[in-house]
Length: 436
Image 1 (cartoon, helix red, strand yellow):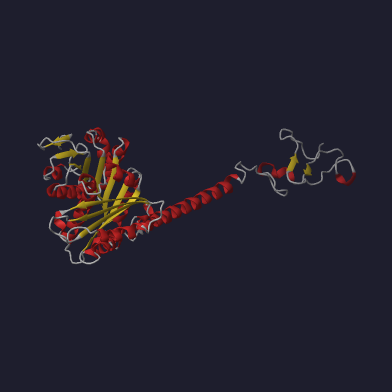
Image 2 (cartoon, rainbow, N blue to C red):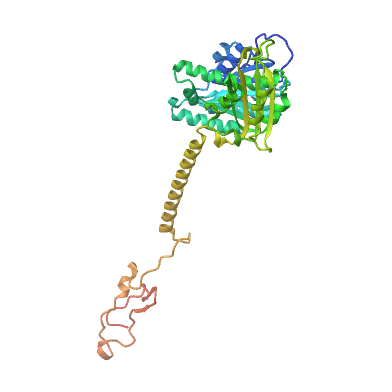
């Protein structure tokens, strides 16, 4: 068993603290952060959180946080990872209390650590007043229903503790990249996570001609609910419109209509290289931007900016980030909610049926009023011990008419409507035959 470790920094060079932190939780989130760290993102710090000490040791990211004491992983059990994260709650709080203003929490949903621990870390981040954005993936269909259900449960829990939640359905990647091998498909899922975090972070950290700063991004993301994000590229004639259409038609939008959102952030990038007129954005091309924004109602909150990226060459890149969707807008969540609702209804119906059976059983034994019913003898029913007294004795010989001794005692029977009361001579008096 490994000794518990707190936040460990393996010699990252001293530099000015960034206000943006990207936190990879579990295997999927860790892979995305490893990729981002190698690629490099301007003015962003990275932290890896995992219940698996070996995965932390194998990562190039300098700052690690082991969750829990064991360091042996969560065994695909979210509840175990949740407990480990709660165990390390002070370490999580300390990790975030360094001037961080915005935290991206990346995780793959459906496994143990990402599903169970990411919501706990997000909760602490939001409690500290940090703008908290979750970026998570949900499984490919071939990974099975159990893992998908576990992932969607994790998405629901995550949505309670973030300002905005971006959900990437891996199954959609099959539509975009059908030729990928299984290994490459999982790699592409991790890469998509990192691209999403990088795109949002660099809107803030990379200064543009029309700048989008932290507060602009905060306006769009703060209490934004479920978010969708897409990037499109355009080249040649009408390239701005092509880039916008490409972004709007991306499978990563999960069939959500961007015009149903509440807040929009639009970033347009071009190369801006001197001497490259094709790479520059022309004033006439801005008409396509204006036409796009005119489609939104005036009540929409729209932030937009222009930035340069020398690597684009003659292309235009458009990034759209939209917020204000509900948890039901997450791809696959509607059927998941319906399934859980149906299961809950069936469970309740079964409980009600069992309760009715138990109630009927009680009433059979104790009566309908909940009290023990008093047993009453039927009119023609005789008590066992007094049966002999209910029979009229034969006439006795003696003085009197008809051979009956006058005044001789006999059994008297008085019948009531419901009960039978039997009067008999005292059992202690024995009269000899023929005597009064």
